[in-house]
Length: 134
Image 1 (cartoon, rainbow, N blue to C red):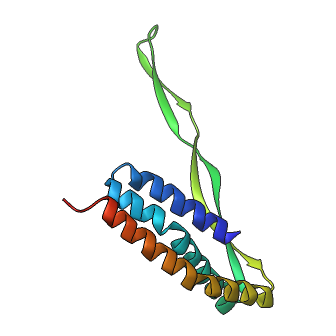
Image 2 (image 1 turned 30 degrees about the vertical axis):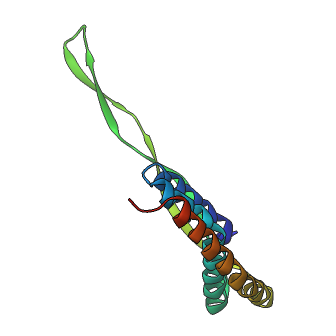
């Protein structure tokens, strides 16, 4: 679950950066996306194993009481009224895991990483060739 959240955050970050990135940077980001995702999954699994539990992060809404004001055109006064606003906080909670299953996933990710590294290197070289620095 935590890996999915990390992947979504990375994708959202890349989406925001893509608007400002050069074509070369966009190409390199796309070329290394799988490699970076597996690296993040490895880091998450290692942290989970070290702690003995995973961390589930979610955004939780809460209401903040506020006071707003409006002008009364008939009496020419300012009238206060309640206007609660919704804000959000990030809440992290521990989640039980099967440590042996987490170790298996970590081993699978670590086996996959060298192949993804080679693929990323080849793709980055293609990006550099396609979009030389100016």
